[in-house]
Length: 282
Ligand code: AMP
Image 1 (tube, rainbow, N blue to C red):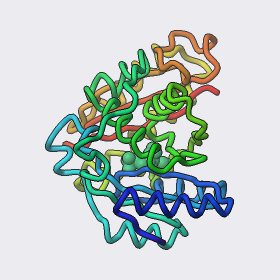
Image 2 (tube, protein in one colour):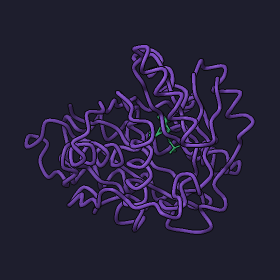
Image 3 (cartoon, protein in one colour):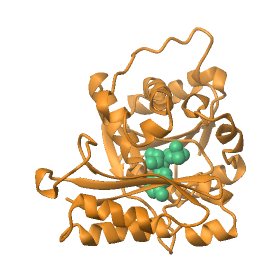
């Protein structure tokens, strides 16, 4: 695997590979990699000729300084995991490469309702910061395909909208959520969970699973009430549990109205913020 730190070096390499007919797959990450990230790399390797992974902890998308400071970082282990996965290129830029002094955002995005509920309501500025870095990275890498996880469902919907607004030809590929054996969605933040919160954490998956099972016989309102009760445990601070339309993210009152319905939730456990979701009707 080749490691690049400079935009110009990375672009030169990609240019040369493209010239010999290779297609490019891109997996942007913030590092502290786990098997969830590696599944995205695997899909990119399968579907494209040259897989580029980036690791950049983007200050612009953190709305709390403490979260940015405490965000796990494990560059040595990340490089080992990526090498073993067969990833071709790792881009690990400094902030000054991603946002040089003369950097001007090419597009100002208005995502309308997509950025308002759920993560948007609880993490002000997060999606604009995420869009800033993803659009910048897309301008650098210019991939044929971009691989992102269902784990961040709202982020995926916003990136989809962003690509449309950019008139981008990059194909966005959704990759399924990879979970621990007990159901907890893999996340870089999981390593910050103490023993007790880690034991409790799978309740999020169980609640989503129950929501899915009950979607056949109950209303969204009934499901949401039951879920909120399941998730009100000591030490757990539920931020939201929403049942939304998979396309617009508007709350769903009746399942019959929509083709794809997703249950999305976020909760803090022992100070660690966890998010998860499940398609409960498709
Ligand atoms: P992050 O490093 O948290 O910014 O995540 C980078 C990419 O990996 C995003 O597209 C995430 O949605 C995806 N991802 C994170 N966790 C998982 C998981 N458990 N399963 C699948 N994809 C994931």
